[in-house]
Image 1 (tube, helix red, strand yellow):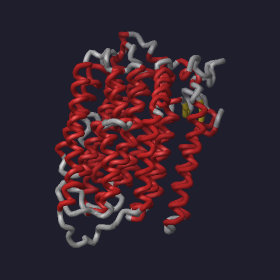
Image 2: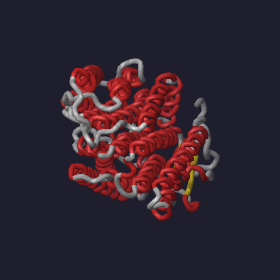
Image 3: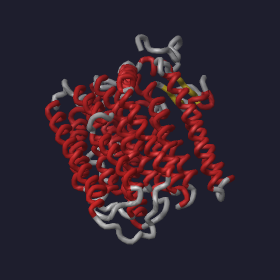
Length: 513
């Protein structure tokens, strides 16, 4: 049994209490511990991704209790890719928080940040539905503390709304888990895959109810229309570095749908036949349209970026809802892109707030650091809108190509192309108001709260943009890898055999991959 797979969960879980107990009043030590911890986390996740790259599936049994009775963590291509993406994103977000001083505007920022990372990593690595629920709750608690960091009535209201919606999701999650356990006697995903496949058509009512409840829960986490109402206010009011980290949070919902509905409820399973194309795909298509219309209608830059996240998640879920290897491969490529692009835009939003004083989309005198901020906004907007040459354009092409055999192919193409045009107009409108029209105005007196953004803040955003460029340059290799991930997901026998310890099949690379 390889122990490194638990390190992405244990490391931040140990750093958080250390920061609280040993460095509570020493911000310099807190920053050093956080950055060093995230660098170590990147190194660990690189190793895990490398080990899983040949198709091997790594199993960790807590206290050496075998599944389905014990708690297990499972590392395959998909989960290791997502934990690596999380670690890289967290490092640049942390650098921005340090450079901008956001980590000094409230208590326990660094400890809560580590707990947040712990929850995200656990959600990606767990092989058990109940522990997925547990890590969701860790996410909820830590994210609420981070959301209200810095105080303010608007932030508190948004935080309460965020918690209420997610508590509804948690309640539905518990109902679903109860239904599944009552029908099968297990919550281990690999064991569920074996048992549900053996359920006869006369005993499927409880499982059908559980499958629908689970997809509702994960759709709430993914902010899929019509369950998206919590996101615009929550992300817009959250501190910018936290909103940037939350770019991976919606992907946890998408990941859960991909994992559960390829392993536990695969597309060819009669129990859940039609669930994906009848409900999930139309909701994803509408999400794309709603998100980009929100971009065009937004009156504040933070709201604009929040709605762009809804649109990008809709694009991811369109590809996921196809439930074909081509669709999942396209969804995973676009997931990496949209995570980095959304994080960039949230951080650029804070650069605008810092140099301008507010985020209203109205013409005002030039802001501090306007040239650099404008350049970063231009690049991030191109990425999120899906214009060439960046990876958003390639990702949308992959999604459209994967949709050829869908019965809703015409709707997918029309909505995706039309919403892309609307998104371009919305971002162009915002950019022209913020940066172009301001050049024709005479500077006024300096506002007390307006300062020049820090160099480290610019460097963090530039680092994320550099990753987007790399994601574009190496698009062939990345898409090739996501194709292998999709192939592994649609051939779950090695995963099931490894988790349930079928003799002779432990940690076996898939042939041909």
